[in-house]
Length: 206
Image (cartoon, rainbow, N blue to C red; front, side):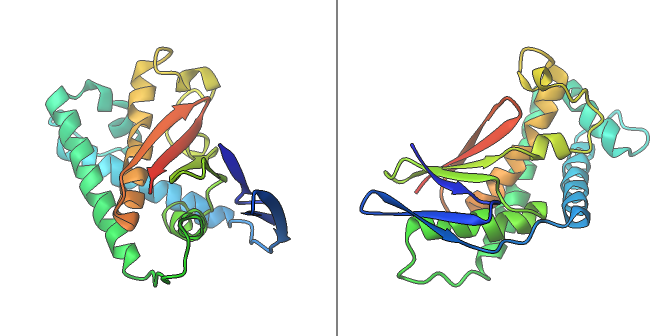
């Protein structure tokens, strides 16, 4: 797997004839206000969807909705996931209407656009890194989403491992599920993800 460079750094790496070419670029650092607002917005979307299928909710509280997700029945959980995917896919499709794809754009250029522009629309910041195996598979890395979430969970890395704290881990899956569906709607390509040591990796087969 070859890395195309960190998206948020002030350098951009491209590859020509298997040699790396580094071109300096000027990239604005994300606004803390924008990032926090987008995190809160995603949090609210997920919490609102959970509340639709949580029959035991007496008062609406976003944090409680997320913490209590694991208590839902399997059917209710699947309904939450399906609804989040539908909202995300629809959002991504609408974002794609503003994207004027050039016939000369390579797959890598499209992926960089997703990392810089599409992800900024979703999270208020760019993706942290982009990697590819140069065989049509791309890996988009987000090292901040879970740490920036507004769920009041224990922030130790061990809770990101599914067997350490099942309740929190299950709720955290909803974040990449939603974001992956937005990217999928934008690209009209299947998007999967994995979580390891608090880093979300979105996997796209182009």
